[in-house]
Image: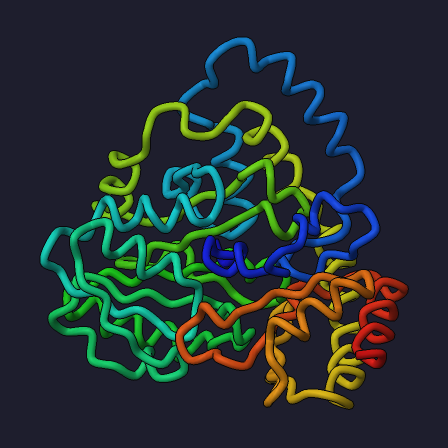
Length: 340
Protein backbone atom coordinates (compact mmCIF):
# COMPACT_ATOMS: atom_id res chain seq x y z
CA UNK A 1 0.00 0.00 0.00
CA UNK A 2 1.30 3.36 0.01
CA UNK A 3 3.91 0.91 -1.12
CA UNK A 4 4.90 0.43 -4.72
CA UNK A 5 1.89 -0.45 -6.83
CA UNK A 6 1.94 -3.32 -9.31
CA UNK A 7 2.07 -1.21 -12.47
CA UNK A 8 4.90 0.97 -11.24
CA UNK A 9 6.82 -1.98 -9.84
CA UNK A 10 6.91 -3.58 -13.28
CA UNK A 11 8.19 -0.32 -14.76
CA UNK A 12 11.29 -0.04 -12.57
CA UNK A 13 14.17 -0.43 -14.97
CA UNK A 14 12.43 -2.20 -17.83
CA UNK A 15 14.66 -4.99 -19.03
CA UNK A 16 16.62 -4.99 -15.79
CA UNK A 17 16.73 -7.43 -12.93
CA UNK A 18 14.90 -6.87 -9.68
CA UNK A 19 16.95 -4.23 -7.79
CA UNK A 20 16.03 -5.82 -4.47
CA UNK A 21 17.86 -9.00 -5.48
CA UNK A 22 20.92 -7.42 -7.09
CA UNK A 23 23.40 -6.66 -4.36
CA UNK A 24 25.38 -4.12 -6.37
CA UNK A 25 22.35 -1.91 -7.06
CA UNK A 26 21.12 0.51 -4.41
CA UNK A 27 17.35 0.40 -4.35
CA UNK A 28 15.73 3.85 -4.33
CA UNK A 29 12.68 2.45 -6.14
CA UNK A 30 10.56 1.54 -3.10
CA UNK A 31 9.65 3.58 0.02
CA UNK A 32 11.34 1.14 2.37
CA UNK A 33 13.55 1.92 5.35
CA UNK A 34 17.11 0.66 4.67
CA UNK A 35 17.38 -0.14 8.40
CA UNK A 36 15.35 -2.40 10.65
CA UNK A 37 15.09 -2.56 14.45
CA UNK A 38 17.67 -4.53 16.38
CA UNK A 39 16.19 -7.78 17.64
CA UNK A 40 13.84 -8.43 14.70
CA UNK A 41 15.67 -11.62 13.67
CA UNK A 42 15.45 -13.03 17.19
CA UNK A 43 11.71 -12.27 17.41
CA UNK A 44 11.12 -13.82 13.99
CA UNK A 45 13.01 -17.00 14.83
CA UNK A 46 11.12 -17.38 18.10
CA UNK A 47 7.79 -16.85 16.34
CA UNK A 48 8.71 -19.32 13.61
CA UNK A 49 8.76 -22.13 16.13
CA UNK A 50 5.10 -21.31 16.90
CA UNK A 51 4.11 -21.33 13.24
CA UNK A 52 3.49 -25.10 13.30
CA UNK A 53 0.08 -24.22 14.75
CA UNK A 54 -2.58 -21.84 13.49
CA UNK A 55 -2.42 -18.33 14.97
CA UNK A 56 -4.74 -17.28 17.76
CA UNK A 57 -7.28 -15.48 15.57
CA UNK A 58 -8.04 -12.75 18.10
CA UNK A 59 -4.47 -11.39 17.70
CA UNK A 60 -4.89 -9.85 21.14
CA UNK A 61 -1.27 -8.78 21.73
CA UNK A 62 -0.98 -7.34 18.22
CA UNK A 63 -4.17 -5.30 18.67
CA UNK A 64 -2.99 -3.93 22.00
CA UNK A 65 0.38 -2.94 20.53
CA UNK A 66 -1.30 -1.29 17.54
CA UNK A 67 -3.70 0.59 19.79
CA UNK A 68 -0.79 2.00 21.76
CA UNK A 69 1.12 2.71 18.54
CA UNK A 70 -1.55 4.95 17.00
CA UNK A 71 -3.50 5.94 20.12
CA UNK A 72 -6.76 4.09 19.54
CA UNK A 73 -8.75 1.39 21.31
CA UNK A 74 -7.38 -2.12 20.65
CA UNK A 75 -10.89 -3.34 19.82
CA UNK A 76 -10.91 -0.92 16.86
CA UNK A 77 -7.80 -2.52 15.32
CA UNK A 78 -8.23 -5.07 12.51
CA UNK A 79 -4.98 -6.95 11.67
CA UNK A 80 -4.10 -7.21 7.97
CA UNK A 81 -1.24 -8.51 5.85
CA UNK A 82 0.07 -5.04 4.98
CA UNK A 83 -1.47 -1.68 4.14
CA UNK A 84 -2.94 -2.66 0.79
CA UNK A 85 -4.78 -5.55 2.43
CA UNK A 86 -6.34 -3.01 4.79
CA UNK A 87 -7.44 -0.92 1.79
CA UNK A 88 -9.09 -3.92 0.17
CA UNK A 89 -10.73 -4.95 3.43
CA UNK A 90 -12.26 -1.48 3.83
CA UNK A 91 -13.65 -1.62 0.30
CA UNK A 92 -14.92 -5.19 0.72
CA UNK A 93 -16.79 -4.15 3.85
CA UNK A 94 -18.37 -0.91 2.65
CA UNK A 95 -18.51 -0.54 -1.16
CA UNK A 96 -20.96 -2.31 -3.46
CA UNK A 97 -21.43 -2.72 -7.20
CA UNK A 98 -22.79 0.47 -8.72
CA UNK A 99 -21.33 2.76 -6.05
CA UNK A 100 -19.21 5.80 -6.88
CA UNK A 101 -15.91 6.42 -5.06
CA UNK A 102 -13.73 9.55 -4.96
CA UNK A 103 -10.15 8.57 -5.85
CA UNK A 104 -7.10 10.88 -5.71
CA UNK A 105 -4.75 11.43 -8.67
CA UNK A 106 -1.91 11.18 -9.11
CA UNK A 107 -1.75 8.51 -6.47
CA UNK A 108 -1.12 4.79 -6.35
CA UNK A 109 -2.96 2.87 -9.04
CA UNK A 110 -4.19 0.14 -6.70
CA UNK A 111 -7.02 2.38 -5.56
CA UNK A 112 -8.61 2.32 -9.01
CA UNK A 113 -8.14 -1.42 -9.29
CA UNK A 114 -9.61 -2.15 -5.86
CA UNK A 115 -12.64 0.09 -6.51
CA UNK A 116 -13.32 -1.61 -9.86
CA UNK A 117 -12.99 -5.05 -8.28
CA UNK A 118 -16.02 -4.15 -6.15
CA UNK A 119 -17.98 -3.27 -9.29
CA UNK A 120 -17.87 0.40 -8.27
CA UNK A 121 -16.82 3.41 -10.34
CA UNK A 122 -13.84 5.60 -9.42
CA UNK A 123 -14.20 9.35 -9.90
CA UNK A 124 -10.72 10.80 -10.22
CA UNK A 125 -10.01 14.07 -8.42
CA UNK A 126 -6.67 15.90 -8.09
CA UNK A 127 -5.35 14.83 -4.71
CA UNK A 128 -4.84 18.39 -3.50
CA UNK A 129 -8.49 19.25 -4.25
CA UNK A 130 -10.17 16.10 -2.98
CA UNK A 131 -10.63 17.21 0.67
CA UNK A 132 -12.58 20.22 -0.62
CA UNK A 133 -15.05 18.16 -2.67
CA UNK A 134 -18.64 17.62 -1.62
CA UNK A 135 -18.75 13.93 -0.62
CA UNK A 136 -22.54 13.69 -0.85
CA UNK A 137 -23.64 10.84 -3.12
CA UNK A 138 -20.40 8.85 -2.88
CA UNK A 139 -20.04 5.57 -1.01
CA UNK A 140 -16.41 6.32 -0.14
CA UNK A 141 -13.69 8.91 -0.50
CA UNK A 142 -10.07 7.77 -0.51
CA UNK A 143 -7.10 9.86 0.59
CA UNK A 144 -3.43 8.92 0.77
CA UNK A 145 -1.50 10.73 3.49
CA UNK A 146 1.25 11.51 2.64
CA UNK A 147 0.19 11.24 -0.96
CA UNK A 148 2.15 8.75 -2.98
CA UNK A 149 3.78 9.66 -5.40
CA UNK A 150 3.95 13.41 -4.69
CA UNK A 151 4.83 13.25 -0.99
CA UNK A 152 2.50 16.02 0.16
CA UNK A 153 0.85 15.52 3.56
CA UNK A 154 -2.52 17.07 4.34
CA UNK A 155 -3.02 19.40 7.31
CA UNK A 156 -4.74 17.61 10.18
CA UNK A 157 -7.45 20.26 10.56
CA UNK A 158 -8.31 20.00 6.85
CA UNK A 159 -8.60 16.22 7.06
CA UNK A 160 -10.78 16.38 10.15
CA UNK A 161 -13.10 18.93 8.52
CA UNK A 162 -13.44 16.67 5.47
CA UNK A 163 -14.07 13.65 7.70
CA UNK A 164 -16.91 15.53 9.38
CA UNK A 165 -18.47 16.42 6.02
CA UNK A 166 -18.15 12.80 4.91
CA UNK A 167 -19.83 11.62 8.09
CA UNK A 168 -22.72 14.09 7.59
CA UNK A 169 -23.12 12.84 4.00
CA UNK A 170 -23.02 9.15 4.97
CA UNK A 171 -19.77 8.68 3.03
CA UNK A 172 -17.00 6.44 4.37
CA UNK A 173 -13.58 8.12 4.42
CA UNK A 174 -10.65 5.77 3.83
CA UNK A 175 -7.28 7.30 4.73
CA UNK A 176 -4.25 5.35 3.60
CA UNK A 177 -1.58 6.12 6.20
CA UNK A 178 0.83 3.42 5.06
CA UNK A 179 3.76 5.87 5.03
CA UNK A 180 2.73 8.36 7.70
CA UNK A 181 4.90 6.55 10.26
CA UNK A 182 7.93 8.12 8.59
CA UNK A 183 6.54 11.55 9.59
CA UNK A 184 5.73 13.17 12.90
CA UNK A 185 2.10 13.72 11.92
CA UNK A 186 -1.15 12.91 13.75
CA UNK A 187 -3.23 9.94 12.65
CA UNK A 188 -6.91 9.87 11.74
CA UNK A 189 -7.27 6.52 13.49
CA UNK A 190 -10.23 6.33 15.84
CA UNK A 191 -12.42 8.99 14.23
CA UNK A 192 -16.01 7.89 13.58
CA UNK A 193 -16.83 7.19 9.95
CA UNK A 194 -13.15 6.82 9.04
CA UNK A 195 -11.19 3.71 8.12
CA UNK A 196 -7.44 4.11 8.45
CA UNK A 197 -5.08 1.73 6.65
CA UNK A 198 -1.62 1.35 8.20
CA UNK A 199 1.46 -0.52 7.06
CA UNK A 200 4.34 -1.63 9.28
CA UNK A 201 6.31 -3.19 6.44
CA UNK A 202 7.89 -0.05 4.96
CA UNK A 203 8.84 1.90 8.08
CA UNK A 204 10.47 -1.10 9.70
CA UNK A 205 12.33 -2.26 6.59
CA UNK A 206 10.47 -5.56 6.16
CA UNK A 207 8.18 -5.21 3.10
CA UNK A 208 8.22 -8.94 2.42
CA UNK A 209 6.78 -9.79 5.82
CA UNK A 210 3.43 -8.05 5.11
CA UNK A 211 2.38 -6.46 8.39
CA UNK A 212 -0.38 -3.91 8.82
CA UNK A 213 -3.81 -3.15 10.18
CA UNK A 214 -6.98 -1.14 9.69
CA UNK A 215 -8.64 1.03 12.32
CA UNK A 216 -12.38 1.73 12.37
CA UNK A 217 -14.87 2.38 15.16
CA UNK A 218 -18.43 1.40 16.02
CA UNK A 219 -20.60 -0.36 13.45
CA UNK A 220 -18.10 0.48 10.73
CA UNK A 221 -15.38 -1.27 12.70
CA UNK A 222 -17.66 -4.28 13.16
CA UNK A 223 -18.23 -4.43 9.40
CA UNK A 224 -14.50 -4.30 8.66
CA UNK A 225 -13.75 -6.96 11.28
CA UNK A 226 -16.50 -9.19 9.89
CA UNK A 227 -14.98 -8.91 6.40
CA UNK A 228 -11.56 -10.01 7.73
CA UNK A 229 -10.60 -13.52 6.79
CA UNK A 230 -9.69 -15.96 9.53
CA UNK A 231 -5.94 -16.25 10.30
CA UNK A 232 -5.19 -13.43 7.85
CA UNK A 233 -1.92 -12.49 9.57
CA UNK A 234 0.85 -15.06 9.97
CA UNK A 235 2.29 -15.81 13.39
CA UNK A 236 5.77 -14.40 12.53
CA UNK A 237 4.22 -11.24 11.05
CA UNK A 238 2.03 -10.73 14.12
CA UNK A 239 4.91 -11.19 16.58
CA UNK A 240 7.39 -9.08 14.60
CA UNK A 241 4.77 -6.38 14.08
CA UNK A 242 3.99 -6.28 17.79
CA UNK A 243 7.71 -5.95 18.54
CA UNK A 244 8.32 -3.23 15.93
CA UNK A 245 5.46 -1.05 17.13
CA UNK A 246 7.28 -0.71 20.46
CA UNK A 247 10.51 0.56 18.88
CA UNK A 248 9.94 4.30 19.34
CA UNK A 249 13.66 5.14 19.40
CA UNK A 250 14.15 3.41 16.05
CA UNK A 251 11.27 5.40 14.58
CA UNK A 252 12.70 8.69 15.82
CA UNK A 253 16.16 7.88 14.43
CA UNK A 254 14.57 7.14 11.07
CA UNK A 255 12.66 10.42 11.09
CA UNK A 256 15.79 12.34 12.06
CA UNK A 257 17.74 10.77 9.19
CA UNK A 258 15.02 11.83 6.75
CA UNK A 259 14.88 15.36 8.18
CA UNK A 260 18.64 15.66 7.75
CA UNK A 261 19.17 13.90 4.45
CA UNK A 262 16.10 14.89 2.44
CA UNK A 263 17.07 18.58 2.03
CA UNK A 264 20.50 17.49 0.82
CA UNK A 265 18.93 15.18 -1.75
CA UNK A 266 16.59 17.92 -2.92
CA UNK A 267 19.49 20.31 -3.36
CA UNK A 268 21.55 17.80 -5.34
CA UNK A 269 18.73 16.59 -7.55
CA UNK A 270 17.58 20.16 -8.23
CA UNK A 271 20.85 20.87 -10.00
CA UNK A 272 19.51 18.77 -12.88
CA UNK A 273 15.76 18.31 -12.52
CA UNK A 274 12.64 19.86 -11.01
CA UNK A 275 11.89 18.31 -7.63
CA UNK A 276 8.37 18.45 -6.20
CA UNK A 277 8.31 19.63 -2.54
CA UNK A 278 7.64 16.65 -0.29
CA UNK A 279 6.65 15.99 3.30
CA UNK A 280 7.14 12.26 2.82
CA UNK A 281 10.16 9.96 2.76
CA UNK A 282 10.33 10.11 -1.04
CA UNK A 283 10.83 12.69 -3.80
CA UNK A 284 8.98 13.13 -7.09
CA UNK A 285 11.34 14.29 -9.82
CA UNK A 286 10.32 15.78 -13.17
CA UNK A 287 13.02 14.90 -15.72
CA UNK A 288 11.60 17.27 -18.32
CA UNK A 289 12.22 16.41 -21.98
CA UNK A 290 14.51 13.50 -21.22
CA UNK A 291 12.91 10.09 -21.80
CA UNK A 292 12.05 8.63 -18.41
CA UNK A 293 13.15 5.16 -19.43
CA UNK A 294 16.57 6.50 -20.45
CA UNK A 295 17.03 8.22 -17.09
CA UNK A 296 16.02 5.05 -15.22
CA UNK A 297 18.35 2.90 -17.32
CA UNK A 298 21.33 5.24 -17.03
CA UNK A 299 21.01 5.47 -13.25
CA UNK A 300 20.60 1.72 -13.01
CA UNK A 301 23.82 1.15 -14.91
CA UNK A 302 25.52 3.47 -12.41
CA UNK A 303 24.33 1.35 -9.52
CA UNK A 304 21.07 2.95 -8.37
CA UNK A 305 17.44 2.02 -9.09
CA UNK A 306 14.77 4.72 -9.09
CA UNK A 307 11.07 4.33 -9.76
CA UNK A 308 9.43 5.02 -13.10
CA UNK A 309 6.04 6.52 -12.18
CA UNK A 310 4.72 7.26 -15.66
CA UNK A 311 1.98 4.67 -15.01
CA UNK A 312 0.43 7.19 -12.58
CA UNK A 313 -2.23 9.45 -14.07
CA UNK A 314 -0.70 12.81 -14.99
CA UNK A 315 2.94 11.85 -14.39
CA UNK A 316 4.29 11.52 -17.91
CA UNK A 317 7.82 12.80 -17.27
CA UNK A 318 8.54 11.74 -13.72
CA UNK A 319 10.61 9.37 -11.67
CA UNK A 320 10.47 8.91 -7.94
CA UNK A 321 13.35 8.65 -5.52
CA UNK A 322 11.27 6.47 -3.26
CA UNK A 323 13.53 6.29 -0.23
CA UNK A 324 15.81 8.58 1.73
CA UNK A 325 18.61 6.17 2.53
CA UNK A 326 21.82 6.44 4.59
CA UNK A 327 24.17 9.39 3.89
CA UNK A 328 26.79 7.41 1.94
CA UNK A 329 24.09 5.75 -0.15
CA UNK A 330 22.47 9.10 -0.88
CA UNK A 331 25.89 10.32 -1.98
CA UNK A 332 26.04 7.46 -4.48
CA UNK A 333 22.65 8.46 -5.88
CA UNK A 334 23.71 12.10 -6.27
CA UNK A 335 26.98 11.07 -7.92
CA UNK A 336 25.05 8.91 -10.39
CA UNK A 337 22.67 11.76 -11.19
CA UNK A 338 25.60 14.12 -11.75
CA UNK A 339 27.12 11.64 -14.17
CA UNK A 340 24.16 11.15 -16.52
